[in-house]
Length: 479
Image 1: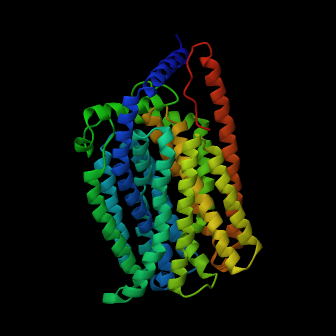
Image 2: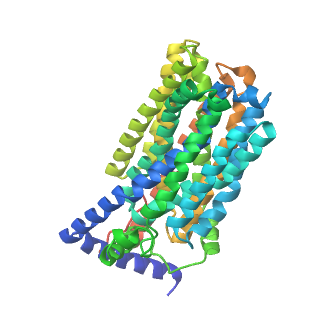
Image 3: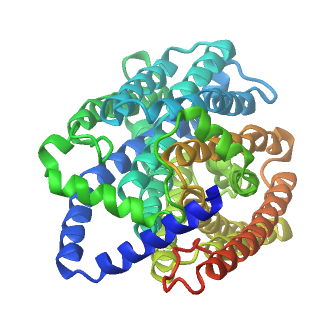
């Protein structure tokens, strides 16, 4: 019997198991209890850590309004380079980190890197020139790289596909709310601590956020579980053996293809690399990341609207991100409810295109500020869905899923590397080139969504044809 026939037989067997199990009311009750425990421990812990991940990373955007450029003697596009270089370090570390993650304890590995990045971020306060800043930002990227793909992979090991979309949006909202609250936090620090003990407000900003995230990293060692099959981490006191067995079984039944035993991390990397869908997702997420290149420059964009003082400017950066967080939850809930991903990514990106068009078409400050609600909500609502769609579509083995998620997140950082250079100092405050390019990349994201839906629809048709006559309903890809 060839490999294809073996896989089809195993998939059919899994379908029979799944139908029998999902009709068991006692199992559904136990699953709800398991998911509730995860929602009260794993999810909020990774959410708050991811929020501080971005608070530490994006503090530089607010620091620009507190004279960090003049204090460090930055000229020309050196500020843009300081933003971009972080993503170079991020790319170098991400894939090896995720390959390691499948072989270590996430409850120790991830908090370790949280504490490392916290110290590096706080050390930004000691920078005195451009070279110091670039070196610090590079190592900050290295130390932050393990967290998001690691956190997402850990979530995908515990939550099923129907549960993962909303949880990914919750995780990703940490980024959106961090960007929102960073303006409010910065406004308070700049107003109250600027010049205190001989330190500028931007220096206090890095020290305070770094110290808080360090404490949270220590706390995470007590709350984060390891993988379902491992009784370590918080799993020692949070889950019974029955609940761990249930967690393992429901993830096994949720995979589109039957898992063919355990494989090496190199097998997972090769399997991800030869799957063309991995590369479609790479282009999709790269386009999305490029489209939200405004993120590191949004305080400067709002300053260009001339709507008030520095404090007012920082406060006004918050509302678009608050609305974006709400829209992200609504889109994620709808996506999980209807079991659909492609249109839930393409739709918000169409809204983002509208926002960029308005920004390019008018000089009216109120209209351009209103447009920011469209492109911020659209980009961030779409971005969260890409991760969950990719994970469920490339989940044939844990090693492949981990490698694929890391590859997609790693290579998509190219968007974060080149997008800061769209914002040329001479283009301020309108940034016509940047807005036009972000509009174009939003269109590319929409196109890749349509390509992926077409590809997965064909794969589903084949799975359906192959199961005809077997009396089973195959587990299909999410479109």
